[in-house]
Length: 179
Length: 366
Image: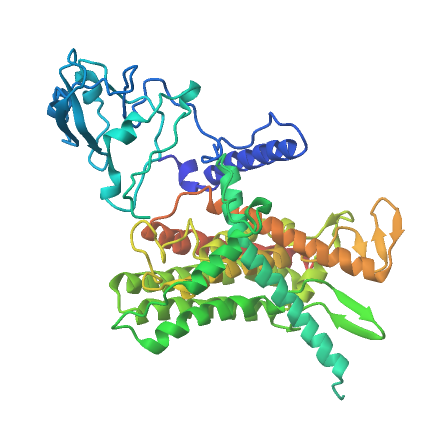
């Protein structure tokens, strides 16, 4: 350690100059902003619930089940996603599809988001492109574990996100959610 | 001399002014701390507390904090010393509050034939009084550490005692130079003496006559407030410190005591080194500039200017202390001790010797 550093005072002053410069520069920008210069920003803060960062197009958000044109799920209940899921959060019960050309459809398709790790393997494994993670919805929370289980109907009602990842469907709320 | 109602009123007013000044400033410091640190770090800071949708830059956050702390559970550890545990925060805050009493916030106010000294208490040993109160404040911290029946709290209390001793010695020794230079222990006299001019045009403020003492005093004073970079008694990252067992408003009172001490140290630094209520070239009758101009001012305006100057200097000092608190990394315990005993204390002694030598060479008080 150099003698000048041991003396400490010089380093203290240079540090204070740095932080003081930040303070006054930011303060000036805040004041300019307050007096009408809308482009002057004194802080890098994004005020979250009102302002949102744009989401990357490849970001994995809440799942949705893709619908066919007649409104039935595109899913054929092949169990690929349930098999590949490392968190084992997908639960599928298969059923006959009314259309004889289509072999099966899910009677139940539950995702326990309390377990899901958002790895996206289910999307990759799906041979029918029936499950996607492009809703842009990130705020799903619940006071109970039960409330984190999202059913087939809820997942099928979701739409893909708009530009910049802004969600186009409301956050689905389980019917039996407590609070 | 019989004390009339007016005398009581004046005495009450003087105390009330100081009380309001320090309490409001101390309360506001939680907001200042949040906002100033935020602006220094390119953030915005707390701005969510609102009344009827009104936010006014987060100024309601101190209020929200107070409500939160008052309504929280007041926890008492099972093995704690009940009496001392409850007494400790009050001791801390009390001595923080009374320490400001002998710091003058103006010269004298003449109203209706009376001469009112603008100081809560006129003491001819004002400096000693402030130090006594600041040192007594550590008893609250030690009490809290001891009475909590918690090892970490005890550690924090011990560290506070050790830190306070090493800081107080440096403070006491560093202001000795100021006392020698201005030849008085009364803060009012020291501030008055700083009004005279050096070489006919430089105000003789303590920071110019005693620059080394200023740095030493500020360093030791920041140590006395127990805040970062000298936060060994709290040590958020290692021991939680003396208030680990406290909750609710009692915890809040310890935090408040820190802020009050910050205000006291700022006020003391202002009085000793920044000329107190002195405005450069402002005398009782108005401005008298060294280059010959004069500007007469009414008495009341002069007093207002003085009180305003004092408040402004205190606020600037608080800003500086906050800047230091949010800039420097914290000292390790042994580093703080080494700085106190091997750095500040010998330098303060050196300052005394130098001041004495200069005074001796000069012949009298310059």
